[in-house]
Image (cartoon, rainbow, N blue to C red; front, side, top):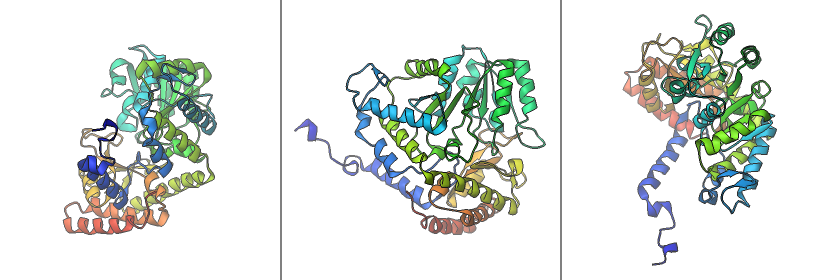
Length: 417
């Protein structure tokens, strides 16, 4: 048998189990209302790139400085992604090779710090990310981390408290940005604090990078020394990451990514990032960004009208954090019931949560995916009403079954890209 032709040509014939699961996931994404703030739908062009022959290539190094030959097509692909990233966000340098957001953040630590060095980041239960120094993360185990939180009265970042912690702790790295904070950080204030204590300022904009690209959210690049981001979420690209930085940090960042933390980049992902960045530079992407914000505000208002309590009382970005303690249901059972009802979100800690991280008291909702499907403010009002009905009637199986039927019919009215 000819080795080159011995394998079946299609996934369906080679591995019907995986093929069936992929098709089932395709149906799930089409039939349910996806409200996970970190999820989205990519374009056909991005999907084509991620499934292209570029997955066959190995490319250790950087454009023009590779360790393997045969880079005649790969170097231009990566350079396009770099140039587009710098142009879109106004950055002096971009590294598009990190495999995901967490390795991108770890590369910043590796580039600038030694184990035991001091870091100041946002506390995980208050909206930060694991890689901002949580004890559950290697970043909290290898470095001397202090965490800032939210003002209990307002639910917002208390910049005076951040400044006091920075003066007391003297961090080498100050981290801004968030994973579950429904407001806009004051990047200028963070810059002033970093300058006052001699820290490098890093901003993690993984969640709101698409809003920055659309021009509807302040750009942290002019204020930060280094900005990290994933390339999916609101940016609507593949599952990858980028590091943007000032030229003075470029060499350290590049060495930290390769060879410091990883080998060859995923060239198919790099191409998909380049495509997503081109898409994000188009005029219709600005309208998409504006609609994300409008949808988030409409969804928040609908939830409040239904009697649910929102952290900070609302939102200025794409995400909403609902505190379910007044309702008397935990975040995890609420998220599970909502999934059964065709409304997909995630359980999430809320500020000053006394529950364990595995069983938090809130849920996190986001509007990028539903916006990509063409839903607008009237649809958000209907979605909010369903969410309120589910969390306030957790034992009513008949009601939840009815809502599941309604949400499926509703979702099918909005095509998936």
